[in-house]
Image 1 (tube, rainbow, N blue to C red):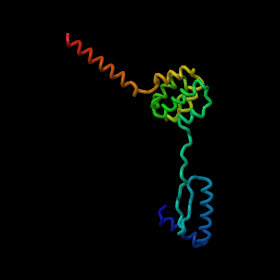
Image 2: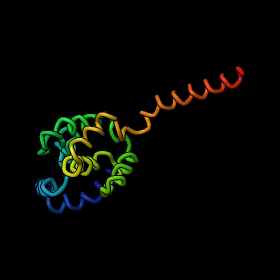
Image 3: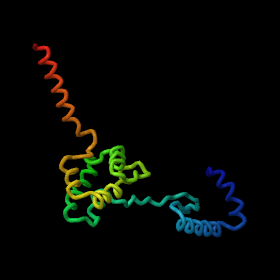
Image 4: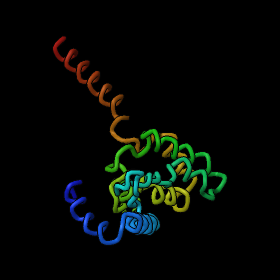
Length: 173
């Protein structure tokens, strides 16, 4: 409502019940709404009603490193899984949701409904901890498996060098 429309609406109520009673009623409404929702109706010193919002709390979902650190892990897997969690946070392990989807499909894990990397943390790390053998987890870590296309650069460079060398030797004959 605009200020003018609000004043027009409130004027007959204030005239009938008095400003003190209206302010008291607005205060009760504000405290009830404050208890029920994030937004509440507050009354400032001039007797005007204003909309205020409570600050939103930040999500308390743990990141991959916190999640892995809080898991009960066998000692032979702990270091490798925590290292994979660190790589996950740096996007060196499963850098995109597409990579996560491929990992889940490959290992028969249900793909998370939410298409965010954070939503996949519990599924991926529970699978690594409970379903994979320690040597498989270590192999993923050692060979940087599931690191996404960014690790293909050296392979592409080698193919280009090999292609140039083969063209050069063909024309030299």
